[in-house]
Length: 535
Ligand SMILES: Cc1ncc(COP(=O)(O)O)c(C=O)c1O
Image (tube, rainbow, N blue to C red; front, side):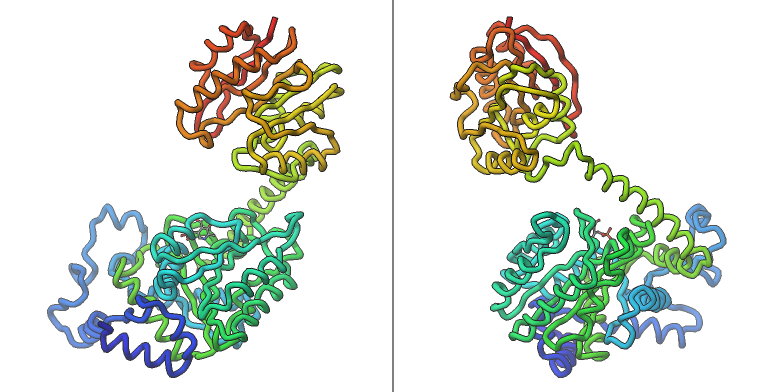
């Protein structure tokens, strides 16, 4: 049953922003901020002379009761500044300070309607509050296809949303896929309500839009609102400020959505967790923007605080105090810039590595594709002969054959795989590399290459796709035997053995001789890179 306090908040929202009211989830409509605590402690502050039984903490000698060993961690801090409960909304001074920060980092927000930020315990918590407020089971939530996995937990697992991905980047991964985004938004905005997550800089790609791209994205959402869809635009700005390219839009897309349309509610999630490199302090914020203005913002702040009250009650006072003091510290901006410079230099280094011409062939990928460096290592251990007939029976996206091609002349490069998508990726990579691969769909142990291979070069499945050790062992034992059978005399089998204890016996039994064996860390499990020779 909806309480009177929630009904009051709902009425305010309904009167000033009926569309925003329609956006609220069932839970969102039930949420309210209980009067008791705030009113009582305010009264107690004024009236209590001897005892204040309202605040839920102990006091001693006029200050918050505290252990010396706890307070020594906050040298020079008055216990009152760290230990009492913070309001569910967050420390008022910190909320003001963060608003100032938002306005100074996003100059276009000046004059736009915006709530006061409500403090959350990290951006994840803020996303979860937004999810509670606006997502009902079955509601559609659009997320980028390059996605931070936790959105699934926040929106699908917790709120049973229907998650739909939109393509973030265009084919060449150089810019946003604006037409792909528009297509998904158009298709989904025939619904009454659409929740759209915008995450820039994007995790995992690091991509931030240019000003023109940001405007185009936002125009699409405003157009959906124009068509009668209620749009909740959730701006996950966790990485705000980590802009490394001079041409990117340096403000949040929130600025382009704030106060733009009565049927569009912009919700901004951001925080000190990443912006101030204070991840574990868990200080972040949720901020709303509706054309309904102050009364709606006030009601939404209360609903968010109610959600906090009903879950974690309030966020860490000590953490908020540290962030507030840091933001007021004269060194704050300079120290932040210094850290940003370090991260920018690291990002540039990563970009240079990715742009390495040695890996320019890598146009397409499939799940569990070989890492280019692993493929290059395999090719080197395989060695290169001008008359090599090379066969990769688990060709995947073609990495091993293409790395072998880089080592020198060969007679033929043959790749087989049971997965048509893998073969399509290998075809694209071969085209990008300008290397003629002979590709066919075939099962590794059933295929007989058109000419006996001098080199079987492969990174086989490691169990994630074959389902369990037993199936994998059986497949790889059969594979080793059939590879030995297919190899030309003097030929090599060079591969990564995920479970050599199971396959070495088969290789020896099939007459192969082990020439090289090197342990490999495959990122979570160990395997062995082996070269076998057929006498
Ligand atoms: C896109 C994105 N949003 C939010 C978060 C979580 O931020 P917080 O540590 O503030 O909860 C992360 C990663 O930690 C992220 O990658």
